[in-house]
Image 1 (cartoon, one colour):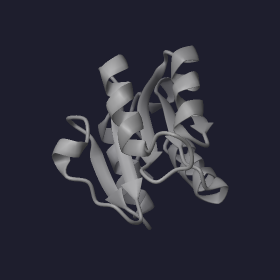
Image 2 (cartoon, one colour):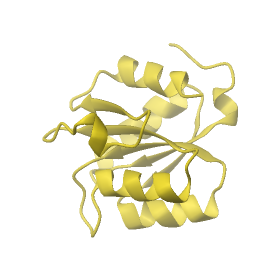
Image 3 (cartoon, rainbow, N blue to C red):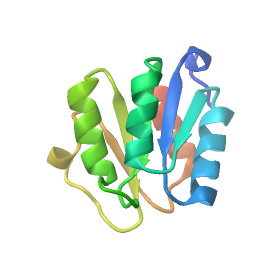
Image 4 (tube, helix red, strand yellow):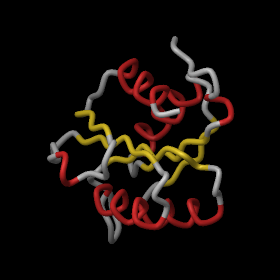
Length: 124
């Protein structure tokens, strides 16, 4: 399993409303050596981002319960915290590159865990 040289110093926020999928994504990031926070929706994610300035990467689903979807979360977070990097996933929607913050990566669900792991490591 690939692990970025500095991944243990990098914190990832996983945003996913489906608990089992979120658990799997958290385990994936941890297996690649990242520190991980998790949120069940965009509102919770924003609260975590506000209180945890060490977060560098956000892995978010697009379709989520709540007032804001994952693309809206990514756009908001990118405006507020420009250095953040994003991995966006969805089983239903394939966004165009202009719908995502610059430098974001998209993976269709079910995604290849090794490909997402490599993408995380490449963002360090």
